[in-house]
Image (cartoon, rainbow, N blue to C red):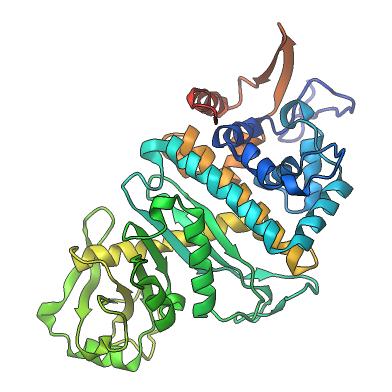
Length: 458
């Protein structure tokens, strides 16, 4: 008897196979594009850039690149994997055509960026309305987290510079709409900046906030129902004053640097004024307390500001900072929300940490590096990355349920998008049959059924 050697079976490989479609699970993204109306919106927005007798629609060219990035691509040439599957993705432009079109948009500057952003805002409004109770604004409020992202450059690109982490590259300022504990999140702004851009530059935060409001449905562009959250980089007088300006009335929850004045006030807070911090499930957070600071520490800040500080036992091995007190780690944030317990407000601000998950997803979706040379080109690339992340957020929001709604891009690709399929034409219909033994085929088919039940645009 011959004994088999090795852990895996030997398979003979031959080229020339035709009856198979790679990335068949990508139909989930294609259907999401159709239901959200992103294809028609981007085509209409980029119509001025369509040349006479052009074969490819400008909107589809850009959208194809975004789909490729959503499926795992990290450069313009990766659109080739869509070109190889016309049965699913239709006709796709050649690499030179894609490259020339990105250059054309980059040369158009702000006009092109505004057109792309307007199309995204239109599709976002429709996607949220389709999501209903699963939409980010289902509770009548919208939360947007602003945070800086370091993108390392491995070659000399325009505006690349040394960063505060002693790397070399760019320092975009991004904003993410929070979907809450039952979902993920989506990008609403990406402001490209040089690597040496300051973390707490108020002008950049104001510009980013203005772009954020333009991406939200009109009813959220002013008023307390829109909450802007930042870390201590947003805790500047100018930015807080802009958020609280009369007529804008935005809600905010921004981190604050522990200054000497704040430190001295914390030392004077009586023990009876400290309240136990809470966790998301309502349980008391062990070893953490919160208190509100009042008095002259608020001088110079807008009317209505509240300063809330948390003290917490540091985890074993953590080093205390000069601003810590009595062996406790101190953190502080400012808000203008009233009528809620300070422990609840502190928990709301602490949940800003979900933005780190969104940044991790962005790095895995085209933001690991900026692939183009000039800044204007990379601004277009950032818009492409945001469209890809939009689709990766809208598809689970509209089509997935349970824990699957929380899957990040890498897991979506591994379990859903990389599924292979067999195209079949029968009765003038095109059918894509997925492998029955694939563990997540039922997730794909159920998701497609939910998308099919949604109304089409127009």
